[in-house]
Image (tube, rainbow, N blue to C red; front, side, top):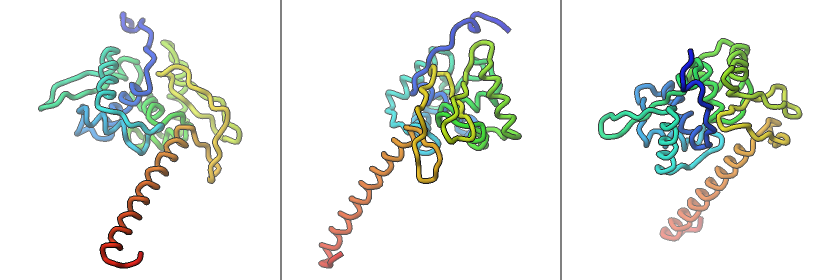
Length: 225
């Protein structure tokens, strides 16, 4: 199959564009009754604190700008439903890849580099891959895609048993110089470390607020906390 669109080079997507595109593909599979998504639903999916690396805090304007840009690449369609516009992805059709490959790309866009084993677990709600070999088969196809590779296998980190894969929709990924040590001995990306620090700061602020509340209540009751 060949047409004018097949000859156009794939655009280099920004982090915000890959986040929006990944959310649309993910939610199509996990919450089909709510799909296509409103802008608010897209924004909520982009700013999730779980299953996201890095954790982002997009504004309405940023999410809308990313959607408009993806519409220009024909990766997103807009439709009218009720009182709000709704958005759906066209990734499978534009990239000419099977849905299984689209799902693997989605996890890589939303969670960052992953091993084949991690991808099999992370994709369970969207597709049940028979085994890790099946995941690797689709990854190999994406890496050897005639129209241009969409994923790349990263150099194995010191001490790691498996290589990680990364998507190429935003160009060549930055290669980590080495793993960040954690108490469990697993590898953590810089994005994960930043997210953990942000969570710690948030929890510390909540604890400080609770302490202030306890002190105020104790003062009003005339007791010593």
